[in-house]
Length: 327
Ligand code: UDP
Image (cartoon, rainbow, N blue to C red; front, side, top):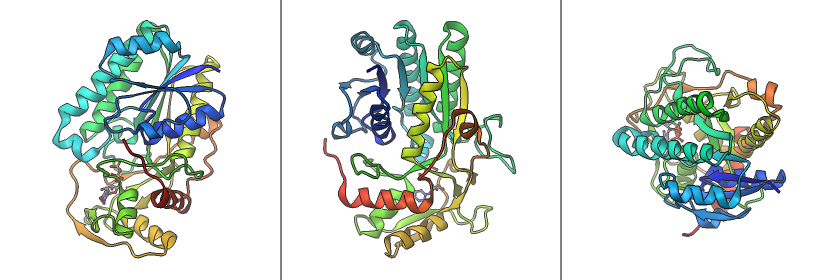
């Protein structure tokens, strides 16, 4: 079975990607520094501990496994933190990715699948967020991801590095079989925080901002199930294996839900009250991020099957009640 190097394979999305790669006949080789990932989440292939900024360690791993491609998930991804500590984001995300890209090219590994984000689009008024939309990130997280997109384009021009860039909208849910799921420490994302508040594991959820220019005043996001998301990555890998051009794809459903709507769906799914209070806006948050593209469906043949809010919250709730990792 061909090896695929999965950076961040011990994290939320990376661990689901490893499961999907394994099911598709690849061997996922996880490369992770375990700062936010969990070794318990590495279940579908070998594990190599290391940091993306450690070029010698990367060279060793490329030499040992000779991966046919890289799937690069490892990143810091908290919008709020990126606004208070942007240097951490530029160093970890951009310097780390540059080091990885240089190591891949040096090892002759010329296929690269990259996790980017809708946060690269930024705040746009009445614009359809498709892949041709201008990128104008308003937070350091989005800016760091856009920079990596630029690096990939430069390395394609100089070294022929073929890449697929996925701009994710909001990823949610968990493996329906319960093998892997979302487990961040600290947790900052809406759905897991809400589930914690529902079963009393933490205080009430704070809704960040109720004065946005949206029908109910709260931010609108496009939620996509993690299993659908990683299926697109396997299709992206096949796209590159077929020798196709480098390409950018949005991964979202095209349906937007406000924070208040997510709360009411969670109440319906769990049949429990969601304790919440209303707080100020969080710096760096865009009013509305909803995909306006079906390029992934049309060109990759992507068919999301679990990305309803009900299915995402149901799977997240099941995982929340049964799953956790320990270091
Ligand atoms: N959000 C919130 N309270 C929280 C966490 C998130 O109101 O405790 C809101 C946040 O402002 C955003 C949406 O929920 O509008 C999704 O935030 P999340 O951090 O899950 O993902 P992001 O959109 O930042 O990638």
